[in-house]
Image (cartoon, rainbow, N blue to C red; front, side):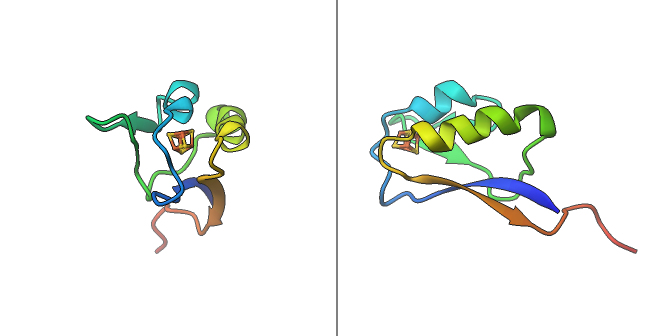
Length: 74
Ligand code: SF4
């Protein structure tokens, strides 16, 4: 199992708080809106800040989801 960040682009107003809190996983586009790789697992050491980014988003546009591990199975 892995945890990833999800963005609701309709709800997001581009305040950019999340990009400041978690720059390792959330980049900004040229207008200041977040860019999040839907397929990138959150490393354990960043999970606390990822939770803070979700909690502090003023538009409730971020969430964490649990997915099957991205590690290839044989
Ligand atoms: S903190 Fe929320 S509203 Fe602000 S840019 Fe990030 S997702 Fe969008």
